[in-house]
Image 1 (cartoon, rainbow, N blue to C red):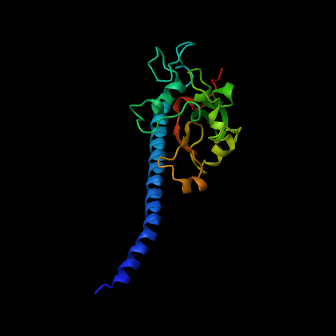
Image 2: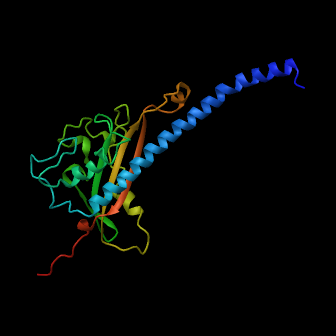
Length: 226
């Protein structure tokens, strides 16, 4: 038979444990939101990279003045980089993780590999990294991919440098290839905004998702023999 002082002790223990359990559950929910956002962006980069891998980055570019707006409205001609980014921006593909025009960014690079050496990067006029935040489409945050979520510059070179890409090639792998890299830089804002969690984890927290695919049109072609 439960005595009165035992019952009171149980209530006190329960009162002490419940806040901790609620914090743990809330923390797990926050982690779930974070993982969902990351996996969503990862899937979107895959879809965008597949889109880019089947298109020509050199001849299928929209003429000046035909770049679609930030809502990814249709344009008369394909703009290789922006239309690839639109796979991620389009709310029909991405209804759950909208990008902030001032903080987030999409970076796209096309590489030609001759032998096992990166011989060219495109677009050539931007050090081989096309950035959504530097396109003339109404996006702010100049080169947001180089910054953290507070706007401080933390990187001035591509995440995937030529040396980094070359280090991925396995011995005996086919040489002479084209590669397209699609990256998303996203500032994740805590959904529950737990005070204790925010003391230890950045809010917003910078997230980086990417996919690498073959780019058939970027494969080096043999020099014709005269």
